[in-house]
Image (cartoon, rainbow, N blue to C red; front, side, top):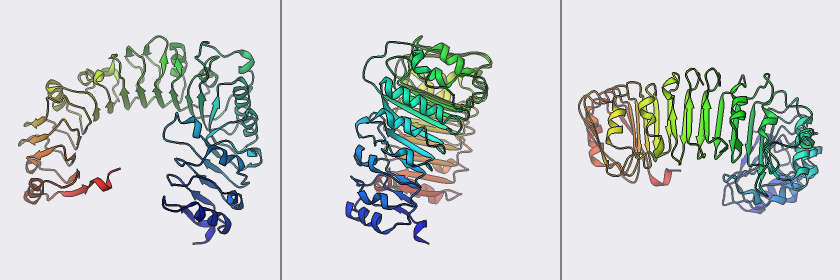
Length: 458
């Protein structure tokens, strides 16, 4: 393999000297990934890599100012950022001469120190994906909107994170700020807005027009009114909506008849909602829904979602949905604290092919699950990683189509020799129980066993 084709991954144990030597000697390198390594600085020699096209410094301890000195004319992707989205202080800065890097296609999770840095981004005519962190200042917002306007013919993906400086108090942006977005992005498909600006809301700027091509929207720690929801509902290509920690003015979301016609994925997490309603023929194409609601919230109309096949519940307030979601094929439960009656409801559901029980999915008093004849008739996959469940018993005639079981050391299995189609077992823990190994040997199918010990678990 020629040197310019190398994809370099530096292990944690290697030091800064190794990186400096690479930047001094491997001058034809095109791809450099430092992701999740112990690297704490970018050497000045980084600019020697004049053929470099991809630089990945995600989840490193590289200081914010280190990226300001980067000047790589052939660089196409600068990937930065951390797992914790609130870690604004360590977000890498936009390179000072970013306007010279005209080949840039992806600029991900970088922070503007000066407002003119944002304006310079508007000269990157090849830019397809932009992720920026800005302060809640008029100068930052104006220059960002101007840059987005300048990139209106090339930008496919846009992520904006706002560092708060004050409590928001206005619902609508002043026209003097809105005017800087002279042209809406023509081909924008993905939009993410995290945080709130003091003078209003950014979302309405990007969801106007019936020719809008937005397919994916993520809102986090930002206000959402019923009017905004109604505008979203009319976007002709919207397939994915994530609402995380949103502030809903009416404390309710009403999905009306005929709206969200293309929506396939919906996530609602930790919002101040008291009511979610799906009317008949609303979100008619919805296939997967994830609900993580910590406050008490009534949810109605799920039985109207005829194409909903996958449901993930991460809250004890969502358990009532199990009665209505008759068409679910894959069900994931976490922190639902379900009781015995709810379990009996699950066993009789005819469509469930996959069942995943995590963390506190069942009440601690419900520590044993016994499956009887004709229960879970269509179940193919059963995953249990819940400390409250200490034993699972399969009786003859239960789960007759079950092919794979994944379980942890919290739980013992009994009766797996009575599962006629069992093909695979996966255990997470120190030592596979002897009774399980013996049952495998006695099973007609001789199912395979995969053991993930503590050292292999991520």
